[in-house]
Structure formats: C-alpha cells, structure tokens
Amino acid sequence: MQLSVAEVARLVSGTVDGSPYLQLTGAEVDSRRVESGDLFIALRGARCDGHAFVTEALSVAVAALVRYDAEFDALPQGRALIRVQDPLEAYWELARCERRRRGWRVAAITGSVGKTTTKDMLAALLAPSLAVGATKGNRNSTLGLPAEILSQPKGVEIFVAEAGMSRAGELDTIGSLITPQVLLYTRIAPAHTEFFADLDDIVRAKAELLPHLDPSGTLIINALDPHQRDFPGATSASVLRFGTSTADAWLSDFEDRGLLGTRFRLHLPSGEVVVELALAGRHQAENLLAAATAAVAFGVDAVGIAAVVPTLEPAPRRGRIHTLAAGITLVDDSYNASPLAMRRLLEMLAAAPGRRVAVLGEMYELGEQTAAAHRKVGQLAAASCDLLVATGGEGAVELAAAARAEGMDPGTVHHVSDAEAAVRLLNTVLQSDDVVLIKGSRGVGLDRAVDALLGWEAA
Image (cartoon, one colour):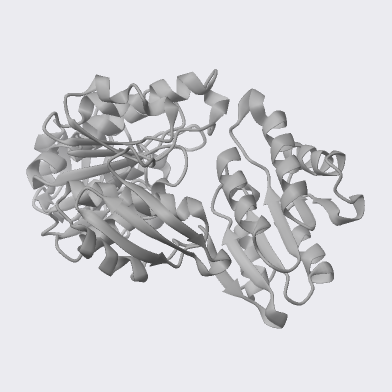
C-alpha cells in the first residue's frame, strides 16, 4: 500500500482526525505487530476491543482505522485517525481496492492440510522468473490475509495467498478480497469440525471460493480427493488435476528415504523430471506435486521446477528435523494438528529407524468428533511408535487410553497435562538415537517443548 491517509479515507468513506497527508505503507490488526508506516485497524473481537490499543499502536503506526464514535485522549503529533461506521467492513474494502489497484495475478491455496507448505513451495517455484509476494506464515484468515494484501512491497507481479477458514462464510469473504486467477485445493478432511455438522458442510464451505475464481483462470484439484470431484462444475475456468496417473500431473518411481526425504519422478503437463526432496514423508511429495501443478499454470516448465526443488525446506514448526545430543533426532511439527495430519506424520515416524517416540498434543476445534478422532490417533500411535507421550486435557486422555487398548505396553504410554510436563518426562526417558516426533494443536504449546529440547529457552 502506498496511499495517504486522505486517500484511504476516501476509499472507505471515512473522515480524518489529524493530518490527511501522512503516507501509509502497510496495515496491521495486531498492535504488537505494527511497524512504521502502518495503518492500525482497531477491531472489536470476542475477547477484546482493538480500540483499547489505539494509543499504544500509534506510538509506532502512522494512523488508526477506528469507529466513528470512539473516544481517545489527545492524538499524538504526526498521527491520524480514520473514522468509519464499521472498521472491519472498511478494512475489507480497503484490501479489495488494493488488490484491484495493484493488478496482481493471484494464486489461492486452500484445503484442510498442507496449505502453508504448498503455498511456500509455490512461491519458491515462481520466484526465479517472476516477482512474487506471499502471505507470511499462516496469515490466511479474514483478519490476517487483508493485512498481508495491504503490506506487500512494490513490484509484485504474483501474489500467493493461503486461504483458511473456521466457519462457513469466511472463504466467501476471502474470495471477494483476492479474486484469484489460480485456485488450488490440497485435500479436504475433518478439521475445525467444531463449527460444522459434518464433512459435507466443510466441503460446501471450501467451495465458497469457486465463484470468485477468474473465469479465464485455472482451477487445480486433487484427483485423490473425492470431495473435490464436483468442483469443476461450479466454474468455467480451465481445470488441472493432480495426484493420479490419469490426471494432468502425478508422481511415480517413489522412493521413501525416511528422514532424508524422498526421490521421485514428477509428471507435469510441461514435461517430466526426477527430483530429490529434502522434506520427509510422502505427504510432502504430494504438496510439491500440487505446487508444481500450480506453477505450470503460471508458465513455469518442468526443468525450472526441478532446479528449485533442492532448495526447498520445511516451514518453521512444520516438519523441520533437528539433531540433538546423543544422536537423538527431533521432528518438529508442533505448529498445528488435525486427524489427517496426525496420521501422515505417524506414518512417517513408523518408517524411521531406532526407537520411535511420539509426543502428541490434543487436537482442537473438532466438536462432536473430538473423542472419536483422538481414539483413532491413539490406535495409529500404537502401531507407529515405541513410546507415546499424550499431552493436554480430555482429548489426550482418550488418545493414551486408545493406544493402551490397542495393545501398546502401558509402561510406554504416558499422559501429561502440558508442554512443560512433557519436557520433564522426556528429559528422563529419552535415549541415544531416539527419533522424537512432536505434534499437536497450537493451543497445547508443544513448540515450547521443542524449544526446550533444543536448548533455546528454559522449559
């Protein structure tokens, strides 16, 4: 964003307190993340009201977007307020205007698993030949994504956006913000089921992006996922399918090299190449296949894709592998968890040599499926690991009980209440050459366990 306060006010039908000539270069909804040049968006949430942080934010930010009737102490010199009826609607409208003004081609990545990794892979595959901007981390919501749109640097040609949701209607809003030329679905599976009656409801919610896809663009669907089968009928865009040998893109000659990664042949509409991927697990090869298919839609050929693959590495907390003292291998996948993601990582752990240790946190936002989902993961863990540390509340209790019921030695199944307790236990039970997988929903905080084991901070 390169706009003055006055220009922003005009776009969102607002009024200005302070200087209208101040220049804005970005936007942020979290007062702790604001940077110089930002517009702070004051939103009322379920837990707190951003208007309470306006004064703090304006110590760094240039201006704040606020409700028309909000009252504050004296405005700091060299700062401005843009007053509107509804800051959230104004924020979304500003993002729509910025997307149109910048004239990007946009790729949207959605699905229930693999979104962030696939997004990062696609951005890397496009970067050698195009000026690429992308959402950071998993800023994929109706709150985080607009800030990413409004904070992209000059010169971006293609914007790669991760699109996530927790409730119906959110992807419809996101679609209106980004209007993509390429829309890629990874795989749809139970996740955030607390807010949906069943998987069919999730599929319908994921389909909300389809009407926003440019009719002259490209829809990319996973041929292995039956839930996406009807999606092409909802758009006049061209369609590319990936995942099976009868699709437009697939992989063959797959060689699983354990924690060293995989080697396989990529079959793409632009040719075929043999690649070696340092990210472990077949699911990561499938993420690369999805990203490569989208890269082809933007004109990148197979040779160009193969040149980038050796540089790819996991995003933080999403499968990064560390070597600890005594030859212990730590697989950090602590960022988040869903039933399908748990299964994929446990399958990878099962193939690892040595004693296999799984530190599994609760999975949140599963609603009525919570107990059954944790029991299923417990059964999978019994077949995949030699030592289990289930971490968290009732879901973790269910997980541990299911592992014991599946025949796992009770002496090798532990339940602890939190990440700190998990670290204390691991400090007493880990042995030389163990392979340790740490995975759980963000709220469990198992990233703290990873950091403690790495010695980055005290447990």
